Length: 213
Image 1 (tube, rainbow, N blue to C red):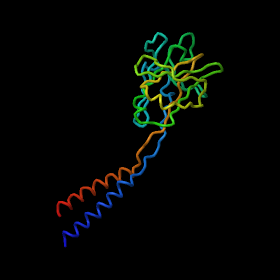
Image 2 (spheres, rainbow, N blue to C red):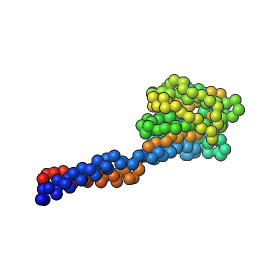
Image 3 (cartoon, one colour):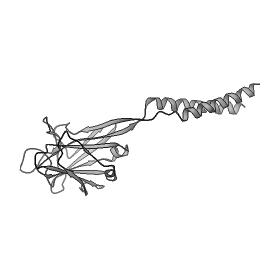
Image 4 (cartoon, rainbow, N blue to C red):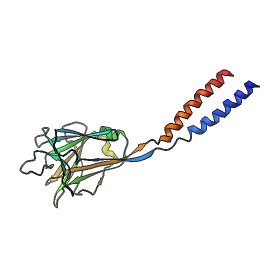
């Protein structure tokens, strides 16, 4: 009789386990945004920005392709974002043609983000920006896209850009700022972990019942 009841209990646990395995909650989507206006002022040649455990690192380069100091601006309006501390012939602290900021996107791309966007500040009439892709730090790489959209307008970044660890930002004309980077990324719901823990507990109980039989 006891053995029969244990077998029935084992079958019932198997049914529960099967149900739990197919009832995992779908992960939610969270917005991960980087606004490059903090910290402000003169910065090192390399500056890390972290959001929800994901780090994007910016590297500054002058027209001679030599690392140069970055500069954070938060002057309001469209004058927010990341530029360079020592531009030639101006005190705007922005990115000029030939100079560039290279973003290390490795951790960002590893999250398999969707709806990726960027924005560029201080883009005046007749000015513009360019995006390049590279897998080598200090090499701006291949031309990917250009435009003149100004912050707060965002620009969609194709998923194909994920083939490049580094995205290089420069000005096509005038001088500009790198303002924002954002994307939607999967975040497991807490209920998912609860269901997983319950499932593992039931697996252990089922094995003990089967050994008893």
